[in-house]
Length: 139
Image 1: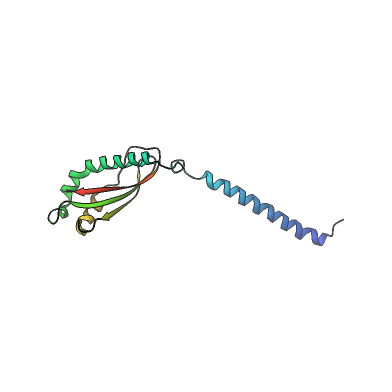
Image 2: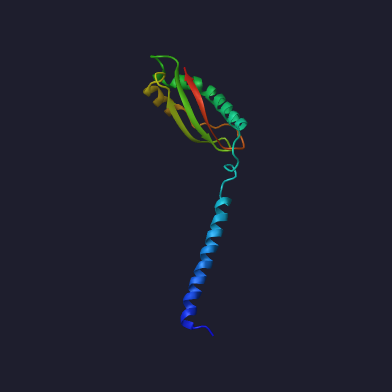
């Protein structure tokens, strides 16, 4: 029969090792299962082109409103140029947006107005999430 003074610590160590292994493998498999399905597929060039075209269509629809709302677009060098840095989810909802000023072809007050007046974009669902950069010139 085994010495009881050694059995208890060995049982504790063995039990802890089993729990640690179960947690490791259980959480590892759960981590990949928690990825939202809309983020799982990687977009291809054709998907990104479709997202870019949908954004350009949306921007064209907002062009007149933006030009009318932003007095800062008047005066100075024309037209003004920016690059919009946009990320969309698979359902077409904008997740993130950045505005990059083109050196010598934009003004801070015009960029501020554009950032304030341009609503969060929604495009038709593309089935994949994607990040695109789209040039914008106003007026």
